[in-house]
Image (cartoon, one colour):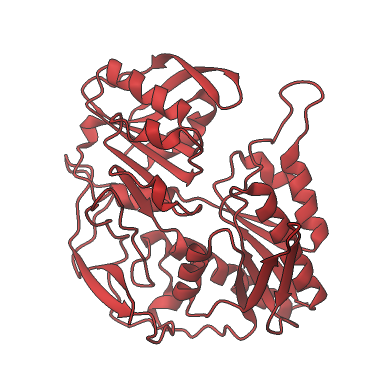
Length: 405
């Protein structure tokens, strides 16, 4: 019987990011459980539930990081709810979750957290590349959630998502919510020169016209992309997952500085710094001469002798963040950490990230990470709990709204 390792916190007092002690973070001890895949996955909530702290990834072996598989007992504090503590049963009879082929592992974790089985769906490609989708169970009158990132190959995964939406619409689904952990065309959100397309708006129109009623997305490249949709958009931030992991690090608040790798990410870095006991902020000034080509010019702020935490929404070719890290070392930074939500990892990203510039590269699993892209400094955090709880709350709100219609 195959097994997976689940890391859950022990009954120890939880740490607080706003602690007035000299140390910014306090670690927590962890215990391990092994659960068979064929065991019951019904969603249960014990009255004496554990403290809700995200787990620490275990040690890396042979360059391959161990991805923390989180469950309902390892929920961040801000997601704690009275419903879970009082064991209120949620009826999932009218809720169905289907997965595309982009990131099935994340979809399975979401379903596991929610206590549901993934919906049965047949997705295949014909010899000429056309995509075929068949729902293998009824969705009539159901709230359907389609989990599909538009990650590479972006065009194929986007087209697959559109066909899945169309299949659900034609099968008389009541509501169709598209869960997009990574929205691939979000960077094309404005015109920087004449005769340039705004692909983010085009993709938003395609999803809307296909029949989606709602969109749930993680860490969009810019908040303005939400306005491109003519349907409700729930924008979920993965920042809390990374912050909870950093809480396991014993780094003094006096030694830390949050760094934005470019001017465009200052607002994101400032928000991150405020949640780290209002840590100081530094900015890397960058001049871009072309797509996927970046040149670092200078640094705004002081990082000498400090632990620099670089924060960005995604890492593509890693040119920006690698050159920024090199500059931070030149300016006297003691250690450099890289944090991002979306690990696109287009070549030569792995070579740059594993070159020794970073103490640790912390990412989430909004995109699947190929085994060939593992390297010793890589840490992968799961956002399954975050998305699973968001889906439950959206479903509960829709169910309440339908009563008064």
